[in-house]
Length: 485
Ligand code: BG6
Image (tube, rainbow, N blue to C red; front, top):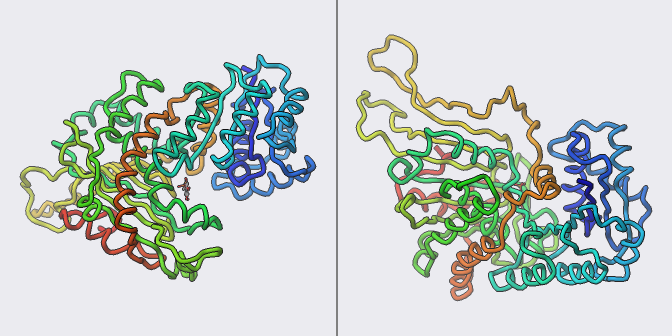
């Protein structure tokens, strides 16, 4: 199917960093139709060659650099054009449309790589310019509101013009390869399912640690904080995929229905649970990789603030499968290193027949690493070969990610996968409106307590693993974060 992509905010950070490199990789891998067209739209008057030079600059910075090929670049950029226009203005869009979008048999994907404050005006202008049709899809990305109410308003502006089925809400964590592999692991194998419940699992840990700071966007970040920026979306989506029931089919509505059920089962937080089960932190000056870094309130453009740059919390999914099992979530900026992982920790054997020895009580763990490397491993106890009567055991990791078949960097980038899914009209990895709303409902309860009592983040030194209370949060339950063991 012939498809056009219109990227509104076509000169912004998201477009330059993520969208063009992903589209280029899709182009090189022959995943885009040969007559695909990509229109970059922004207000700045700019010549095509200046624009392409800016796009090119970002290519070498791609984390998963697909080798740059001059020939592929030339053919790709022959499909990519820059258009100076105000996308909130129907006249501008009319003029663009008259010139480029005459053939409405072609699918059109409009990517709003802009702040949500202009989603509504852009959608109206698209409608007024006659661009909205049954084969138009619209892609949006967080921040989708700062609470449930503001989300509903943003969503109303989108769904006044588009049907829910035409709206693709990106959570780029769902596009990461190991996250999709988690679905395969859970639902294409029989051995895990009987164990995947509170009889055999002891706890689940989801950590998304970043060593970067606020990356020059202090104002944006300060209004959000780690709870809105990371927990409300990425971490809760990961929790949903881990905790959901098997969907009847690998189809968008079936998967989303199951994720929604998990969100509705999240135990609501109150004053006491926010006090006991939520830890907030804010980094102070420190060092990462031997380099000094400023504290959050000394970052460029910063002022005094109580915004959290770190959150750790204990959540519960109150249903038959997960009753009593804690889900520990944590995320933060300027931590010691960048890593994201999900750890499913199984219960100890009920009775050990082996002589006491160090490490004997290491639980079996399934570890899904999202970054920096993308791996899945299962930690099992194994006998050390030899004649020793003490039968020494040690934990070994069974690598389930087959690095020989999937060498580092071979997995597609999340945006590659997600853009292709929008083009193919497959919304399975996109978040439905009721999911976003339900996630906000849960987060709002926590934010309401902060609003009443004031946010009081503890400080932690940049380059550490966050405030000591985050360690105490899990230690109180007799457990430890995996990387501290
Ligand atoms: C974004 C957040 O959604 O995710 C950023 O707004 C964060 O603050 C980023 O740095 C992390 O994404 P990734 O893919 O680098 O883990």
